[in-house]
Image 1 (cartoon, rainbow, N blue to C red):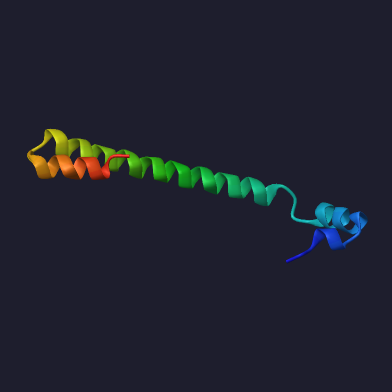
Image 2 (cartoon, rainbow, N blue to C red):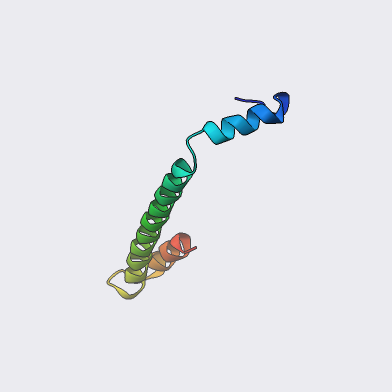
Amino acid sequence: MVDFGALPPEINSARMYAGPGSASLVAAAKMWDSVASDLFSAASAFQSVVWGLTVGSWIGSSAGLMVAAASP
């Protein structure tokens, strides 16, 4: 790990400007956006299944307990 406080500002600045640039940050942001989209899809599917339990064929106290346990 680099200790930026141990190096002179000129060296730190030169390393920042000589680095990979913003492309890697933009790529990481796109990947995080993809992860967020996948998580939203999974949460929506999970919510659909839980909702199906409340109105579907599984009726009774065990269904209510499961819905309570699975609901946020």
